[in-house]
Image (cartoon, rainbow over all chains, first blue to last red; front, top):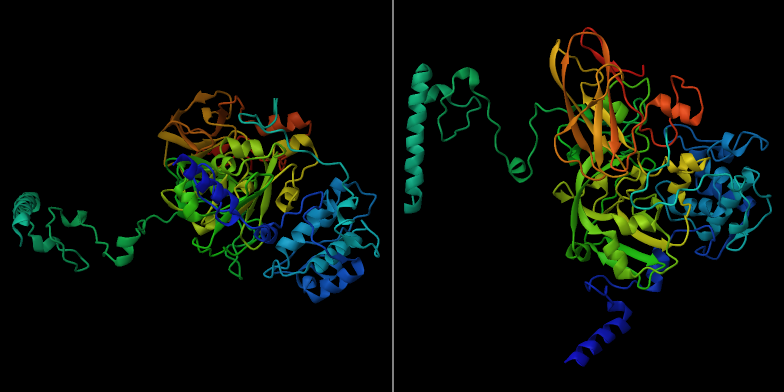
Length: 190
Length: 432
């Protein structure tokens, strides 16, 4: 009896499609394909980036073709009402310290992967998730070029994108090491 | 008429007779004279005089199935900030909407009046709960996908928790408490502890952060420490005794109690276990220059506000008033609230109307006899970890900057809110 039950459990565990949580026996194991399709989080290492490539020059074309220009304006200068999408290009000179320059994603993000991630998950408005990997690489390159982060001919792909040196460098605050019962900032404000 | 109903019928008759005789005593009215104005019939005569008779609310299928407040109660949400983008806009999108704290009683915000904020103006997704799933993957031994049915089978918890938007900041231009503090609300949330799900998946030793992601069109995603996930996060499908409302994340919302509103991921579809801060777009939006400022824009500090009397309200004259307000903290339960009725010279301990819960609104009261002179009323909260709500002066001093009229408090603004009471009883923003 006992061995029969063990056998049943082993059969269940061995069969991913029907696997369930160990304590309560609910849920199922997603397939590799399901995880890949849903996992749009691109972390700083870029390990989740799909194959593909793009340059700023190609990105300028995608920017026109995909209608980015309608909301974000010519060359990322910012859009008109009613959408009024934010500017994507810094107007201030590069000699201005980063925290005194505009708060725009392709300029102030610590990682170029964040730029890729957001264009991929959140753009274009109303057609999110429809851009191809090549288009996202190209748009990322275009916006980084507009902000003088990379040269116009630099090819961005899975290998080069995570290596882009962003202007903010290491100059941003890290979140505290949170534990239950933590005060938000010791000694504040007294 | 069945035999079982006869006793009740006779009881009703005798009660009717009693009422009738009462009516006769009260003014000799017949039942015909107090028939309802709208012509509905009702089966028990009233002994009320005409002045006391109210019009009737006609029963309808809708009212029976899902009730409604009185049409005399007109408290509504408003777009936030004042003069900001309207909600809905011309495209039907929703931005930020503030809760009418000036009319609130108790500690629970009705779901219909809960504040709403969106990462960027967005349409609410109309999610079929039968199709919705939550996938947990990444640095786990067993990635798992749960249906709503799966989640509802698991052991559940029900807790009161506030959610507050980082945009809940008070300034000199605002007039009402809805404008100054309306981007906070408190609801009763029901769901599965996230720790239960993560134990089922089995965390790898390298797991230090998790990313929570929603299913709305922008797929908002935030990074949070795994210690929070294992401590008190709830995967909530219930809100105030029913399903979470679409504006609040139907069918599933992550509740990380006490963290800023943006972390309370709506339309939760995926949790990825990772080994570093993932710097997704929402995280980028939270980026600060200094580590200190970053810490102040994460877990919410102790905060309170007097909701009555508050801006634009009018005291009819000198005499007794119960000062009422709300207090909360992301650090735990509110321990004490102090109220000052003399502009901060003397602080008095306020009462709570019920036991304060962890990371939940607490309702405080303080009895006050207004002598008709001009004054300023303030409240100050202290939480169970000993954190004290600061004055704006103290914050500016800590940062070593001058306190200007439009001073912007770094991180989430939990500074003390003053209300000015004028001689004529009018109440205005003390920062103005």
